[in-house]
Length: 340
Image (cartoon, rainbow, N blue to C red; front, top):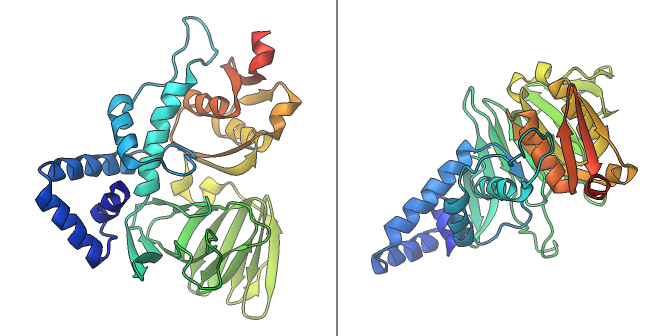
């Protein structure tokens, strides 16, 4: 019922579902209070722009109760005079609550329904507005200003097995993609100027009339025009102009390509050392990883306009490490190493 009410508040329910909710509102004296509470949670999610990958979302009712107790809890406490982060769990739980709200309300969208099941969604941003879009396979997209993204949100084809995902979207405008890896099912972005094909990567894509430009941060992306194509890797950029590939060049910083990405960090199954290299560049600080075993960890999360301490609190909590921030350097150590 909670999931139905979330969709009802976002205008994504069928006529039959609307009748069901209306009947419940007549029967229940608490209906309006419950809907108001869910509406507040959705708005809190829209205001939040930090999340740890929450996995499968828990029941909304349980999250609402937790949100009341943990809303806007302060960052992890530190003992006086110490740089070490401690008590990660409470603050991370509050972040996860915001993450669930974002799961349910990442962007204003319109859904197309087939046999009572959402089959596609369209996300639209106005000038000066951005939106976060999360796909069924765990991929995350930050939609740029004045853009439109259409994406399938459920498997509706008879030849698709249960639990499979449609990894294809249509883009008009620009977006930054953090795509979950699936070597057996490449991800495709269709635009009027050509198609981008990826396996698992992070990249910025800008689609205008007759031109498709890509800047790759991680992984590889292939741009395909009507007759020709070009493939680029991490740290490279290129474009299709009226179907003709341009030269492959060194990628400029994402913030120069898309000013709306300034202050934004996003990782998708990113190796820890690569992620910490970006954190170091972003905050102008050196990051030391003290144990080789930690390099096997990966990160899937995003941050917007957060302090270095907030970022490292979440990161080190997720990977089970201890962090300290010193003069010009962040040190990451395994907890066993620190405690010994």
